[in-house]
Image (cartoon, rainbow, N blue to C red; front, top):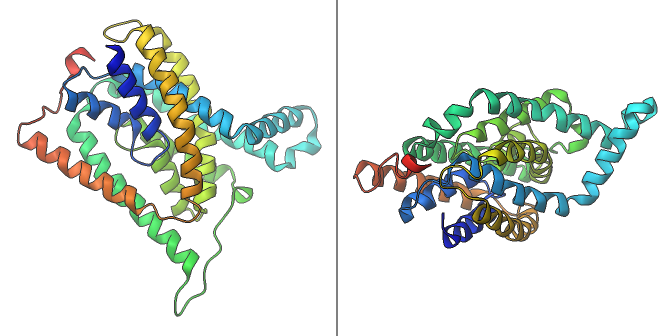
Length: 290
C-alpha cells in the first residue's frame, strides 16, 4: 500500500465511519474503483481505532462519568441504581453479540462477506430499513391531524433487553455495507428511541467493540500488502476527519431526517449492481491481494 492510498483510505474511513453509509463498504469500494488491492478487514479494524479515538474525545465527559460510576458501583451497592453505572453495564451487555459473532465469523468477514454483490445488497436493504425507521420516528414526533405526537424514549429508559437488541444490530455491521451506526440507529428508532439517544448509544457501544477488534487485528498489520507506516498514517487521518464528522453529525440529527443517507445508499447499491452485472467491476475486485 502506498502513502497516497493510505491517505485516501484514511480520509474515507474518517468521513464514513459515523454516517449511516458503512465505512467498511466504502473502503472496499474505493479500492475496487481505483484498481487498488482490497485493504482488507485488518486494515479496516485498525483504522477504526482512529475514529473511535475521536469518539473517546468527543464524548469524554460522558465516558469518564460512566466508567467512574460503573467502577464505584462494584463496591457500593447504592450506586447500582445510578443511570451512569447502569449505562456501563448496558454497554458491556450490548457488546457481547458482536464479540461472539466477530470471533465466530472471522473467516467469513475476511472473505465471502467482502463480495461486492453482497455489499450492494446490504447497502440497499439497510437503506430501506433506515428510511422506514426514520419515517416512523418523524411520524411519532410530528403527530398528525387525528393523532397526537408520541414521546420517544431516551437513554434513561434503556434496559438489558433493548441493550441486547442494540448489540445484535451492531453485530450486523460485521457485513460490509450494513453500517454500524446505520444498523444500531435503525434498531433504536424502531424500538422507539429518539434520534439523539439512538446515535449516542450507538457511538458509546462501538467503543469497546472497535478497540478490541483493532487490537486483535494489530498482529496482521505487517502481513500481506498492509504495512505499519501507511496503516498508522491512515489511522491518524481517520481520527482527525472523524472528529469533525461526529461533531457535525450529532448536530445534524437533532433536526434533520436521515433520508439523504437513505437515498445515497440505495443509489450506490443500484450503481454497484449495474457495474458488476455489466462486467465493469468484478465482484471480487482486488480480493486476491487482500
